[in-house]
Amino acid sequence: MRKIIFAAVMIAVMSLSAAAFAGQIVMDGSTTVLPFGQAAAEQFSKQNPNVKFSVSGTGTGNGFKSLADGSAQIANASRFIKDSEIKSCMDKKVYPVPFAVALDCLVPVVHPSNPVKSLTKAQLKDIYSGKVTNWKQVGGSDSPIVVIGRDTSSGTYGTWQEMIMDKGEKTRVTPKAQVTASSGAMMTAVSQNKNAIGYEGMGYVSKSVKALAVDGVAGTAAGARSGKYPLSRYLYMFTNGWPEGDVLDFISYMQSPAGQKIVNSTGFVSLQEMK
Image (cartoon, rainbow, N blue to C red; front, side):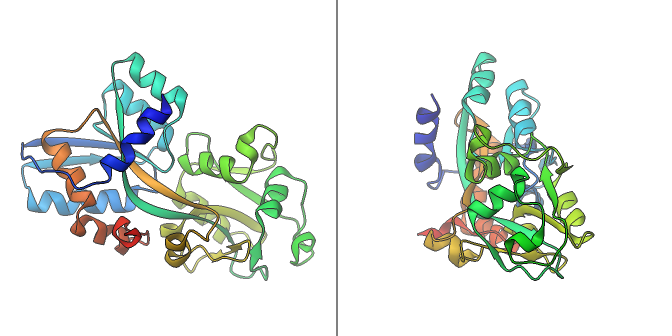
């Protein structure tokens, strides 16, 4: 079932024809997608005053729940939909269709004072599983590592589990990890603790934290475009079936040069840069 939905990505990423109907669009889901999703919604509303938006960032998993129960027309997601989420949607006669809207790097971050510059995927797994507990074990100072994670409804958490933690099947995150409920909360927690490590989408990385390279490759636009950065991912907007009216018009705008310019301006990688 998931493979059928996935096949729609290549179709959905193509340009869409626009349709103009007045109304309100409710978007919910990923806090990673939130910055450019909200900015695009604001710009779209300026050009289409009759279209209003309600935009929330409650996490990717909650976004799919909102799509399934009909309270949102668009579910923003920082990972692809799970088989269980597809079933939950289809049980309610909701048929999720994915639209890739940006490319992102999932970046490990530490306090700016931390001397460590790069970690391997294996080291990250050992840190998050609790096997490695002191920075000196990975080339840092003799200080305990404070592990910061995301809540399970987060798509970023899901991506980290899949890419670093063996999908959680063999390796689990240490129970000592501090859990944060949003991308912003993650950045704040890391910036305020000199021994902390966290992870987040590249658009959230600022001077308040220090980004680490993974396997010697920096999480930059160039790394994402080349495919060399090992923790790159697509970001999505999901709709119930093929969109119509205002929703179709907005998705079309999101994938247009104007929408992709907003993606770039918020620190993520536009799809046009991948062509």
